[in-house]
Length: 299
Image (cartoon, rainbow, N blue to C red; front, side):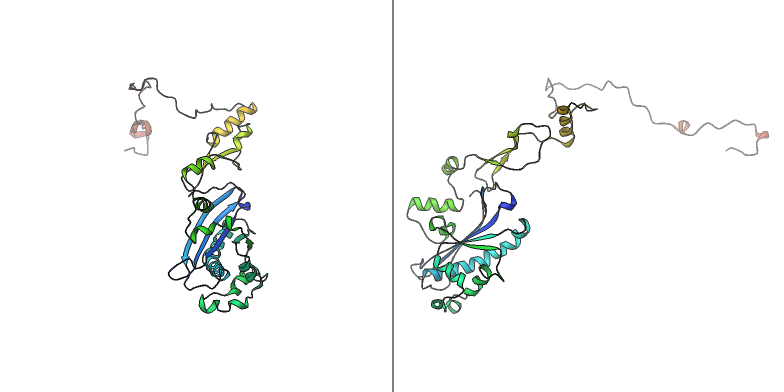
């Protein structure tokens, strides 16, 4: 599993995918709920949470199973995540709730469904909860309910098994699970323009370009094409480009290597250190005054 982030914070938002497989369990005929949460942007996709759970009761239709999966996923995954991402991301960030069943979306938008009055007794969920949190203007959360094509539903992989190799490969790639061959062919090197701290000693525009190399780690690695220098060295190099001579020479970035690695340095050629001062050096000599001419005796 890999993840990459190549956008500014104001272009990132939490995306939640909810899906269900009607009567997925052959023995109990109960459905399976799936949920997937990721931080996404135009050039970002970083998975955070994935969940697969069997529903506690049998559903009568696909929209019913989708409502159960959406209710539990929104209440247990997306809503707690909003408390965190409203602090980390800029103010006004909108989350996105992805759903691939149009009947379920219509029920949430209207808040009424006469054919599913049994939801509260059977599944313990309420249609009014999703209606208030996703569509009602007075109580709506900063989340947009959108329709998603089934081919792009990231939560599909958590709900059922796959017999087709092609469909399984597409399902795992939607949640950022890639084989080594996929990484080398699809996500080998991605050039992303990202804001970095400007280097005053560099005039090459290509220095502002990072190379995000997708590997087997969770996050991509950023490779800098310019060395990291201290502030003193940066200012000194900037002064040299402007023609200003610095008072002290620029220290080298790397210390010089000795010509002979087996050379043992001899004793220092500097003069020996000055000995510590004595009492006579600190206290001045006492004046010699005849005893008959003084009124103060020196001991």
